[in-house]
Image 1 (cartoon, rainbow, N blue to C red):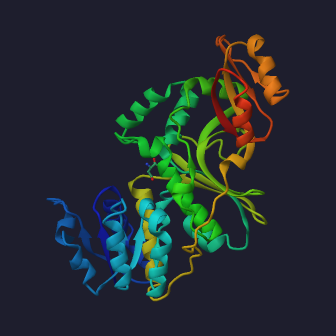
Image 2: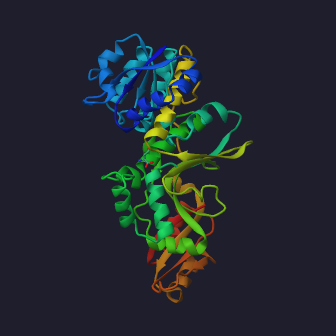
Image 3: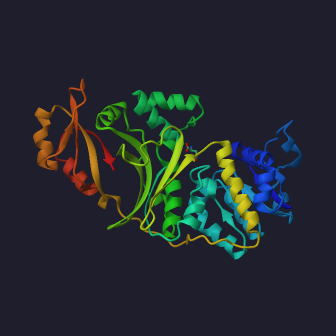
Length: 404
Ligand code: HSE
């Protein structure tokens, strides 16, 4: 029997206890041992909940119990999670976490400490919720140079963009609806400003390239400026707009960014709608491979945490190899990266097209019927720096969206 402690009895923590209880036989069989939840740590009381029998408020009870070999940290946030996890690994306990803030900030250090103690620090649930992506990157896609990872990594923003695209609604209306349904937080900034996706792509790119991508170095643009008018153009063009977290190897180095991107219907991520997440990985010999599923939610996320517990139990006295060093990966300057841009301009084509052509060349233009005071155009592939310089020459640019 292996004793496990769960730190945090919130949505994911209660899910972990539920998944182990519901699938006890499966989990035991897959682990090769019985998994027993010995403690749950939470500051709160849960009267009437069976967890009361194993609830503790003092972390030291868990830390100093040599019978506890695996800890599931599902509290979220950097502190006290970091202090708790570090202490657990130093005591020779393996840790499984869903905490992307913790992994993005302290991942390589915690991996190193786990290795020094012949234990494991596992974080499958930190990116893509229930979608297996960390283990595939770490253990399966090991014969390839990874050319790119492109992810729809945030369910809240994908829900909002899908609704805007399909129902013609504006951002504020859909955000409010998402908040009422409990998909979006009351303070939605982490999702809509792209910070959540930023931490997730920093984790994935660190694993893909073996060095630490600092999430603070990742160019991050959220979806707050995407409007219902943008989708009127997108629908005419047969495109959609998705919030991408992307890392790609280019001639100027490794580019990592989070931003809304306009994609056409041939793109593998075009049909990823609603709260779903997907991650498209391109390897130099494997080519494209895609992972799709629930990127959030109690049971999918708990499923990923419990899969890590099973892995930790299978490898109790072996540190499984993770290539993610503390050495910093210098990401390329986004200004050097090249793509097409979709650009909206106020005024009529008669007034503005000459200026647009003088700056950007012979561009394709797009008109939306009924929108008489603006039009849009699509640039050739140019660098972000070139775009910034050329756009200075055209008065009245309303917005621009990167295209892929
Ligand atoms: N707020 C996140 C999302 C939850 O919407 O995807 C999972 O990290």
